[in-house]
Image (cartoon, rainbow, N blue to C red):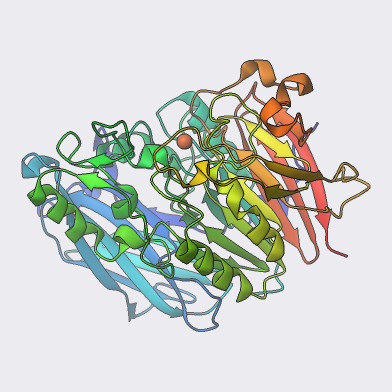
Length: 505
Ligand SMILES: [Fe+2]
């Protein structure tokens, strides 16, 4: 297949970016305002990046956005002004949180987050950041599109670990000019630590220039949504249960300190487990503030789509009544034309690495009843597109068993074998897409385009998989235009390796 046929106008259209940056590299992951020869300014450890902040529903005039950056632990007086046509005079409020490294303060830093409020939807804004009255940055971004506007977004997971593969996927994803990124978890390997973000995440997804070899300036251009996953929770405890161990890794759980995502979910019944020295836990909680433990379940709208993002880690029981009640309330209260659910551990995965972690299957009847269209996962480092399906669990006993790898959920499949995404485009059932080939080493080489290996006795050899690609890295590009949606799976070379169209009318 060929590369998607973007017009030059589309290619030049950019949702956001940086137009002036007075910060230059002075070391690995360190940037200085060297052009100004100022010695009173701290070194920057993360260049400015965009975060969606606490937006959920689309409300005209009440949109907000966040511009975030990080410095070494020396104070400076930052200001951010913004406006519709130029940086303007509106002042953003700026939050500053200390991220403690657990060692001496040399490796600790200040995390800054500027909150820009009362914005219009689907509108470009310009901003200027000053430090001690020196302009260090100017840029722009676009707020979320309202209902009725076409949108496009990219999705990938299991990504940052400092290899050419994740650089290439970042570059190719950027080339499609998405409105935002919807990551499917395992953001940074191996343990989601703050210094691993500094080494593998920010330099790749917030690279100065787009290039196959280095990554792309995605983070400074568009919001980056994500979900928490197993490698975002760091270590395992003495019982081999996933747990953030602040004694072993004092900069654990950087998911909660680097991202600013909506906080409209409930306090989780099964909060992310952690242990370690009280002083370290307290320092982490002060930095994360309201984001811990709440930020693991949330929802937001973008254009005609609604996204429900969930924690699916093995420390939780998805049969929990409160968890399911919140899911039901959230999905019932949206009038979006397209409903997505995003969680890391795939319910329907024909691969052979995490096949038994099926606990999220118990949600299928609920998601079917609430008219969800597409579910996105990672975890298996492959691309898998099942046929549209419905599923009736027969035994949810193992799904309740916390921390176990064997959480198989047997049940009855109803598979739509007519849908082909080309001539027959109205699916009878949900599409459960695994897009976990975002950079980390690929799984299941023998399963690539090999249908015989996609059958499992535990599933009565149900042929629920349509495509399974495990010989290359890839990401998903979604484009929504009214009642039509297309999904293209694009590999690290920019080749489209799968493409489907879904319609509602
Ligand atoms: Fe994973």
